[in-house]
Image (cartoon, rainbow, N blue to C red):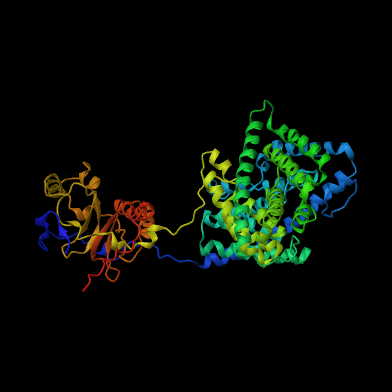
Length: 621
C-alpha cells in the first residue's frame, strides 16, 4: 500500500475529493504500443518502388550522358555508347580536355548549386543527420549533369557516387512533396540511394547494406523493407536495360585452404593500411586547395591539369575505368603496367577529388585496391608457392578491402564484391581480408573517407548499431515500489508544512496524488507545490488539471523515456495494466540514467580468467 504524506490525509472520506476527479480517473495517458510495421510502411513500400523506377531511369540517363560527352570530347562523334577515353588519339592535346570540363563544372557549382562538389555520399549523410533528409530539388539536375561533364571529359571518377546522390535526391524530393515524417523521408532518401547503386551495378543486397551502414543509421523493419524493395526493383530494371550478367568478369576461383586464407588476412591488413593513407592524402590535398588565394570555382581546373598530364602518360587513368577493374581481376593488366596504372590513377583521382570536383569514389578505390591486391598476390605466389594463393582472388580481396577500410562499410564491401563477380569461392577470402582491413583502419583512423568531412564540420558520426539498452529493461525492474504519495483532499498549506519538516524526502521532485480510495489522480511536482501563486487553502485535487501520464510495469524503459519526452514530464507513475488507477510504483529520469550502469559495467569490467582448481595430492594409504 503506498505511503501517503501528510499522514493526517489518510483518513478515508475526511475531506471530499473534487467531483471532476472521477473524469480524470476514467483514463490515463499511457505509452504508445510499439509496432514494427503498420499501414504507413505499406505506403512507404509503394512510394519506394516508384522512386526506384525513377532512380533506375536516371542511372541510365546519366550513363548515356557520360557516354555522349566522352565520345564528343575524345573522339569527336555523337554517340551514347558508354566507352573508355583511353583509346583517344588527341596526343598532347588530351591535357586540355579535363581542364575544359573542370571549368564547366566550376561554373555549375558557383552559379548552379555548390552542393554538387564532392563525391556525393558525405553530403547525403549530412542531410540525413542534420537536414531532416531534405535535399534541394535542383541537386537532382545539377549533380548528374556536373558528374557527367567531369567524368565524360576524363575525370577519374566512378558514376556510382553521383547516381547514389541523385537517387537520394529523388527520394527526398518525393518525401518533401508528400505529407510524411522526417523518418519516412529518410527512408525514401535511402531507398532512392540504394536504387541508384543497384541500378548501376545490379547489386541489390549490397545496396541495402550500404543504406544501412552509411545512410539510415539504424536497422528497423519499417525502414529496411522499403529500401530492400527499392533495391530489388532497381536491379530488375537494370536487367531489362543491360541484361543480367556480372559487372566484372573473373575466372572461377579455387577453394582456399588455411594457408591461403592466412595470406588473404595479411593482404587485407596491408590494404587496410593503404586505405588509411589514401584517406589522409585525399583530405591533405583538399586542405591544400582550401589555402589557395583564389575562388573555389577555379580549383577543379587546377586539379584537371594533373588529370590531363596523367592521362597523357597513362590513358587508362581517364574516365570511370570499369574496364581497368576487369583487366585487373582477369589478369589482363599485370606487372609494371599495373603498378604504373595504380600510382597514376591514385594521383589523378586524389588531386581531382580534393579540388572539389563532382564524382564518385567507388570505382577509383576498386582500381587502386584491386591493383594493390593483385601485386601483393603475385609476390605471395613467388615467395610462398605452397600457400595456394590465387592472384585473381587476391585482386578481388584487395578491391573490396580498400573500400572496407576507407568507408568502414564492411558488409557492403564483402557482398558487393561477391555480387559484381558472382564467385562463391571468393566469399571466404573476402570476409577474411575485408575484416582485417576494417580492423586496421579503425585502429588507425576513427573516421572514414565518408565521415571525415562531417567530423571536420563538427558532426562526428558513429556507425555502430547496437540494441537499445533501455528497450531490453522492463519498467518494473527499476521503478521505486511504494512511492511517497500525497492525498488529493489535503490543502496546499498542510503539504508545504510537511515538506518543510524532516519527514519529507528531500530528493523527490514529484509526488503522485491519490484520492481517498487510494486511486491515482495525478502528479504534482515540487515546483507546483511551492509556487507562491497558489492559495495555501487550495486542495490538491483542485490543482490537477490534466489526465495523469503513466507507464505500465511491462513497458520498456525506452517506451517510458519516449513517453516522458512526449508528455514533457520527468517522472511517470507506474500503474497496473488491468486497473490503471492502481498505483504500483514510480519511475524517474534518474532511474533511466541509473539503468545504464549495468551496460557500462559489462563493457568495461574485466573479470579474472577462470583457472583450473589445483589438485591436492592424495595421501598414501
